[in-house]
Length: 211
Image (cartoon, rainbow, N blue to C red; front, side):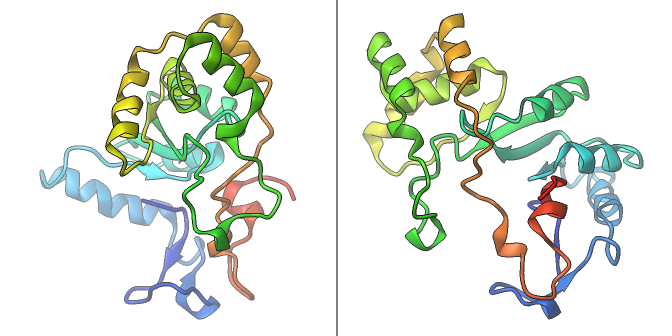
């Protein structure tokens, strides 16, 4: 389940209110039950979710017969989501970190004019220089150190090779503490595609956060 949001059958992007259903009209539990049926039929071994808050996971777990194997969310030093990570570990739900390098390859139309560039962060650069590695390897090593699955995107063979070598990166406790201080609750993929005039979704009810 890629987002905790519903597009009507047969509809696609660009979204309008008439293309969307609220979670009251089609609850997550209903969709999840259909996915569980696929497991029961042997059509898949694992099912999971993406972009689910701790609250939505709690609601899902209250009725699920098969708990989600994975929750794929945006995770990086600017959006560390420590509470969500701890909850998922307690519930034995794996976390996959998407946009671990700051999603710099997004179209300019999806970027804020003043958004911070994670790969250019001075502290990340300082740690990279100390270990003789790249900033990207620091970010990926940090994600691995936290026990998360990490999925960097690249089409460059050299960068792909560098990313794979991040599995061998060893960050010190001091490095991890320094990176922990970088958290600014900054989403690069903020879910605003679901927020349309008159529609059922807001950033607040999508992420279950106060405005």
